[in-house]
Image 1 (cartoon, rainbow, N blue to C red):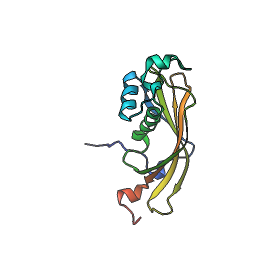
Image 2 (cartoon, rainbow, N blue to C red):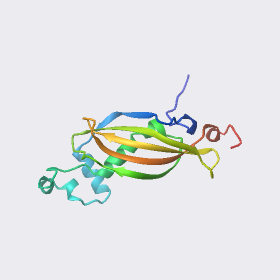
Image 3 (cartoon, helix red, strand yellow):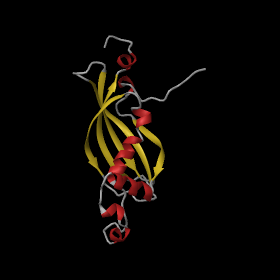
Image 4 (cartoon, one colour):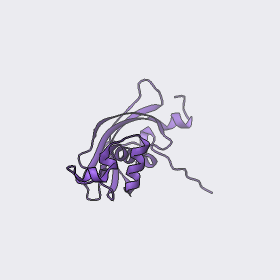
Length: 162
């Protein structure tokens, strides 16, 4: 019987200027927002207090932006880095240009913008990913640049001297 284990991409498989659409989307709930916000000890009333939030510029509670960031990155894992990542190296240019609300559906996509072999870690490469989250109307609600270190295929599978 043939067996296939889900995995991410090896360094050699990442292609520049390729956009990966991560599906299905994720319809966000009040429970997501309250649980994440309280688990992370964030007491921001904009996420927890409906009465207070109703008097603020958006008129309602907003999804916690850190939940949004974590979810757009998390949605990419099975397709891009599951089992092939060595380390998450960092984030830059994180932005939240439009709010995400309870009941919105979050769709995630990732574009490969750069890649290079590691100078200090043979058999590994650094890939730059641009993660974008859009709501059900296609409006960008979050974006971030992330660098990850991933295995080269032969080094990870032990088929070379690397």
